[in-house]
Image (cartoon, rainbow, N blue to C red; front, side, top):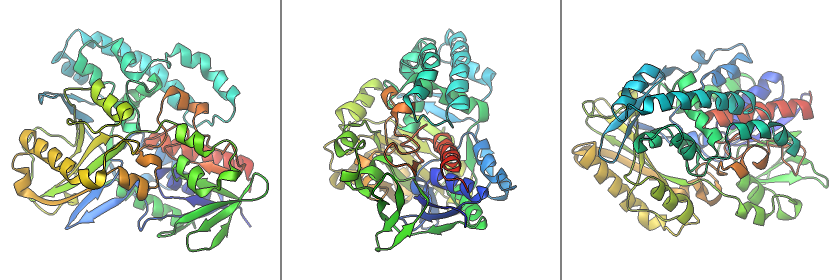
Length: 496
């Protein structure tokens, strides 16, 4: 009999780990609380409109290729990725925009429109981020940091690469125009970090996008989930939907025996991989007396990412002739001050910065004929703040719609056909994310690499973590890298 692995959750970290382990010959059984797979990549459907609930920016597509290649398959047999150009259109508070893609000469022409003197600075910035990318992503992203000595081995390189600086200050060394600094430093927000306190290692995201591009999955990100699920089932894996794990059972030593389900059943396993939020897993799935390291007080004391307010809406008209692109970032007049409100003060500000996703520019299938499908995201404080989202959500959404109508989408309210939203309460109550954070543990230096919750639990020998809260962190490349780490550790610890 091959060894049995249980996977908790069906986010991309879970699906990646499950597929990899199945291809190696393990038995894999997956348990998902919700009625559909995907976790944060859930799909909402209403009145002919389809909305990706979570990730919409696909980078490093080769990481999907590697999963399917393990069983002699091709990504294109399961879903189709198309490149986005430009990657993003970034607007300042006056509505002027900056586009960028993988064409360096195009980027220089865009910089020229803002500050020609910054072209040489950008060139130097890219030259330095290449070294950060090669160290932080190519060498270290799929390597576990299980011992402090693992961290010490790379510490000289991290110091040389100025990882002690934050992303904004790192960019500011090279780029002088304030808006361009924002354009090249916003990337930590994609993985739950504040550009003003996230280690500059994350400046490599800009290089990663330049290296492999930004892609979109035709039919929406949910088609990637569907493709991975089909692949897993072809390999003999089993996925149980509407099946919540209530507890991870630990024996008298340091070993996991399996999981207890909410319906009372016990399922034994040789190892458990949790894609559930790391803090949530420790706090609510493992009895406190069994935890010596991740005590409740330690969990409470960790820094967590911001949360998100995300509104999904559909119109009965097209907006093809507007200045919007597939991926749009709309920055507030305030930058650092707004981020301070969100991350530090944890207050809901009167202004906001937005990510506006307009996928029907690329893929009209997501809306009824003649219609448009949108997703607008606003970073907001997690639930340590005082905002009562049961009272605030609708009015906050109204403010965003009014802003978009006044500045980007004329007559929006007149053409609105569908509207729904998620907020920090959804992240806490539906997605089991501690404090309602959207990206789990914040990627500050003191919570990165060895300092981050480990891919193999420090407490229990055969409990493993994948997803945003463990190393290397949030974002599709990060969570897929965590699935590589989990596969390699399990093959080492639980050999067939």
